Length: 372
Image 1 (cartoon, rainbow, N blue to C red):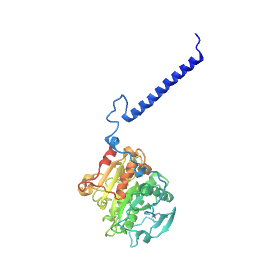
Image 2 (image 1 turned 90 degrees about the horizontal axis):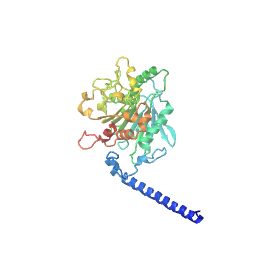
Image 3 (image 1 turned 120 degrees about the vertical axis):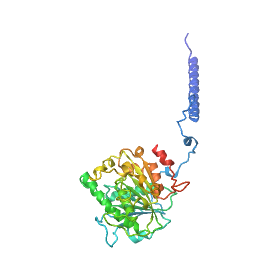
Image 4 (image 1 turned 45 degrees about the vertical axis):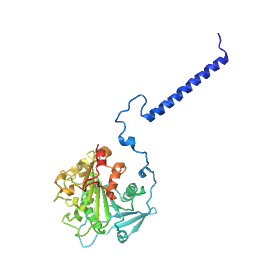
């Protein structure tokens, strides 16, 4: 019997009704599944941590995307020693070159203008770059450091951010290059120490050194705390307060021991944050730098014999293995753009609270989480 057109239309309409019902049911089922975790399947207890399950979804200030800016309450300075040779001692302080970043332009300044801003209310973070950084790169990369640590945030107190620019342009020949920069780092430590010694004692300074920049920082603190480098010292006196962060530190891992090359450094700072990366391909070859010592780098294996340091000094040091974060690279970007490393470093160089409970009891929950 032949179907009539009206019957065919009825069948088609019936099919559409059933199809719509199926689609609606699937949508409702999927929505319920999203709300309950999984419909008809028991949720694994490891799928979400308690903090993930209970924490409100709030947008932190660091999650806001900002374009580059210098906050009105901040100062950004560039201090250069690229014009200075390798020299220590003498009656005269080294002469530095000063610039201040204002309205998109580096304006020349004087030493007097910089030191006039010394204040207990103005924290002074200082970034010391590593090897093979040219002059223009030091200024541009340094602005990135300022922005990530200070400029992008509204809640940080006023800061006087300093970019320390030293002669680290590449020299032809890898081994020749790193040995020349290692030698320069020791003279540069003297220049940095002379600069820091001129600040008022109430100034809070946060020192961030990367690679050979870490060697410069620790050498400067060694001098400021009564130590000597190549027989030269810094005159005793009241010095600023220091906190230190060292990334991928390119210096001998036993130098912090009493009587060693930087043995006076650990006691010179209130707190130290030191990263360790055993996957760093450059620091893995650090032992070839010095034929006589065959030493590992601090940034590769950590401080050798930390238990031999005085207990009060040892308690100031936080070493964190960041191999799982940084991986097999020797690149400052891997550190700066890791949110965890950035946040923890900011705690040190901007003088955030580091302790809770009893004195000497560091906040270690974040460090434990990173190590895991």
